[in-house]
Image: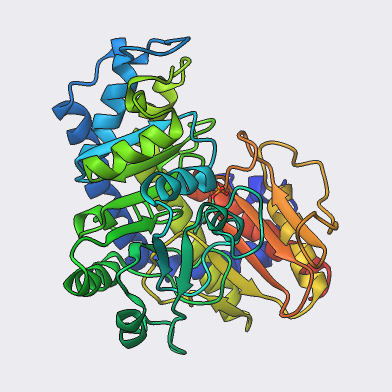
Length: 424
Ligand SMILES: *Cc1c(COP(=O)(O)O)cnc(C)c1O
């Protein structure tokens, strides 16, 4: 422990807060061991995929223009397909975010007259305009795709009976959201998703089952494409980019589904054959290589935060002992001061922009002021340590990421110190 207390002290962390953190950490050895074992498995899975696809340094070369014969891009996609045990993959800097990747997967595979089904209630906020749940120019609704949703049961599980009723001759695609995102329901395990897909395909074998995999990658040792999902979709500035991808999204799954998505991303007839990688391939490969351990660090931070704040009497989701299915942690403070102090603590721990003090502001599209803490190398990257909260009851903060466990730990300890200093 040589000097450890002293260096924590240089961040303003008191002996009391540090001691409390240490007792919580000591109680989590078993949990951390499980997280490490999963990371070890996933690390080997990624290395095996890279070896099987003969990744070589020629794959890091930049292409420009049309990007014909971009060997690096094609090999990266083969590696993603292997990691996700899928037939094909689209992994591109031209997929500019998770929302964009989801939009391409949906609009590439749905046609006028088709119906889209969400079996987990309202999907992630940004998809509302993609689908047309909120009126929006260019939505699927404008293209004649109808939408139906089945809400979750009060205990947060799938309502199989009503899902069965909702599937009709028009239902073409079911979109399942693995992570709760910023909702209050539980996140789903890969096995729960598999069960739902098996159930739905019994009713309609040709139903395309897509999973919004954001925040879920590498949390378990299996991905949704291993339990029947026809497509899984996510962002490279979350888990699978390992913090190194500066942009990008992915769609993995059945070859015909990926091909249709690719015709939507580029153009009919062009598909996957074009799209220069602009020198980003090395970051994508290396980020994927690091992703399993990065996700493990983020998970340790989430479990640590849950236990720290649960012991102090705050309500936390997931709770301190629950199995994890994504990297998001929510903590309910019940008052604006708690939320603000927490976010300011996360910011103060950042390697970038630690000197700024986040304040609540009226962000476009939100009905209450929002506070956000992020000191990230990549703008908006939420695999990096970040926290955000709407300033409204129940005054809950959503916290995620951390490229290393030590950084996540520092952020949580500083946040706790700020709360103590503010007398909360
Ligand atoms: C982050 C997220 C998205 C959207 O991703 P962006 O990259 O922010 O557009 C979609 N679904 C879920 C569950 C997410 O967590």
